[in-house]
Image (cartoon, rainbow, N blue to C red):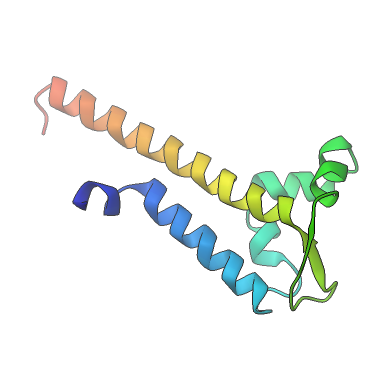
Length: 106
């Protein structure tokens, strides 16, 4: 359990869930936290391509924002990107820890 709580993946998924809750209750009415602070989703939202059209095509969820609803794919994308960020950061930390252990630098 201690290992899970110390992982980047756990904390980034927790942040993603809190971000979704915050968006649902209207504290992110302009999607700044949900989309603007996530580099991958921000690039998708600023493009006019196939991926943007796909993200907009999902089941609409009503929320207390300026528009009033958002596609569920933006929520799924947010959770998935935070999961990817966590896995990458945990991998980097594990690699560094493994290298230190191998070289007896610990």
